[in-house]
Image 1 (cartoon, rainbow, N blue to C red):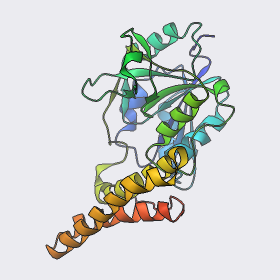
Image 2 (cartoon, one colour):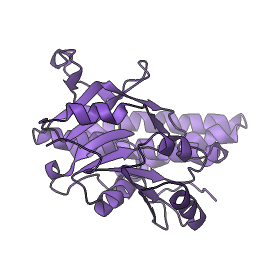
Image 3 (cartoon, rainbow, N blue to C red):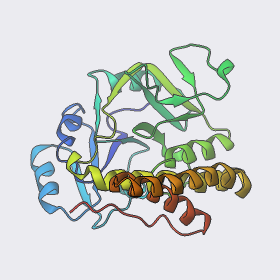
Image 4 (cartoon, rainbow, N blue to C red):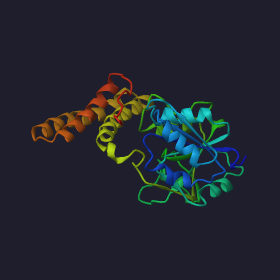
Length: 286
């Protein structure tokens, strides 16, 4: 089966993304259905999008679900075989999707992704370099979550792990699908731009940095424990935990409160994961 405009839905999870979403949406063919999952109660944002763009739905979750749960919510609202998970800080080229449509003829895959146009930051990983035969279409072990097309029939309705609020949810998805011997491809003739860390307005920088440090360490422990066991998760995480505690105290002594708090949140994220607490921390974006 081939991906087409008619059997594809693009899902974009947003939160306070008014500063960036327009460039993304303008780059998408207006004939393709789009589902926006706004992780807030911002009715004004929803009305703005529906008034400006065609073939668009905007669902307000009423709270910050995170990326994984937000994407699952969007997938549940879609009625097409294929869905494209897309971050709001991405911009498609004029032929990004037409190239994908063409290559998807008779291609069996679970995940198919365009290639990042920034060669310094590839959006995929291949653990065994010998597997990469340098064709335009090549198989990978995982792709970054900011742009990925899923064939829903390959997932048995088991998509993102909602215990992960942010970070490594796409790694977890890719690893699970590879364990089931499903295929993940990147097509190098289909390019996409990713601005990187621009999803939320920069005025929330302080809260976002605290959140990133907390969740990165929570998610790393959870991911490693889930797939490789407690010991392999604990040892590298504990070393970071100890360094973070020392650095938090040091920066407190030298009166750098921001860095002190940053390292404290790193340690807190790890410790909460070790204690089997949920990924509960949420940045204040009000």
